[in-house]
Image (cartoon, rainbow, N blue to C red; front, side, top):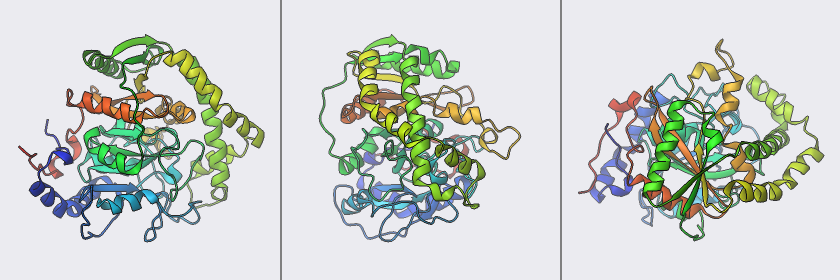
Length: 438
């Protein structure tokens, strides 16, 4: 299978060639995928540690020159405070922003469906969902339009599209990366993170965006046995195969049950997500330009009382202690699938379709939401392909502040596996293939 080389593996001449055609390539791919809302004009390079690094940003980040749409046809007030210091840092470091990417409305939908701007298509199969809400960022990376993209994750919005599109995602420890200048959804859960084909391309931007604290190497892993029992056979096998790779790398792997703990956390995660999103975007409930299902979801959040919301937020320290004591229990990280179900066809996630399934939407974020409530860091990495040739991803979840150790571990794993970086089959003929440095 053809591969897209890591940006960091290219020599200086090849990088210049890629940069020269980057916008043309992004525009060509956009006609097939609808990944970009806006492709930015080229800017004169400013040198710096990220000189020319091609990246994209989810259309929820505000700059002095860019007012984001938040996935809506008419943006209005999105509750954004200030400008994104993340984009300012990347600009200062010399990175090349190719454009702003499409997303689901208000970042509040896990499949990639968008009634206002059309869905972003999956570069592996145009009939399947790309995952949301960072849909365009994931498709842009997977198709080779950019090397890295910024996205957000409130309940799985980086990890789910990483699974669907076959790339790597980093959801940071809560509060590690600034959310200033970003559209809020549920501020107690919101994180800004990165998507890339592999960690080797993700790390240069991560170190610019955050002061990653050093932590001890990861030695012990827990595979969540009862979670795997709920997965499709292909996803269960992918997790077992990844566990074997970890074991071969000297990681001690145990199997434990965790569903009761996950369910306890998830109850609070849903309460906070419903309640805070409704309060942040209350004005959208009566906005006819917003999709009816999204308006109903926001209205439901107003049924959560302020006291109930406060109780869930106060529960976070206890939930963290319980999870660390009873699930991690001396281990460094847990391993579980991003999704227990196969990537669905788009019709199952379109409310206007006769095949629509609300249960499918719930299932897509079933095993990601609890991580946001805990505030733990997670890295999603491609781990296999299913029987239809669509990617499958696992997530490794560590304790707060272990981001760098998680990224280092996945970087090591990706030197031994070739699941990441493969050129998606649905757009393979549109992808040029620069040669990596010898």
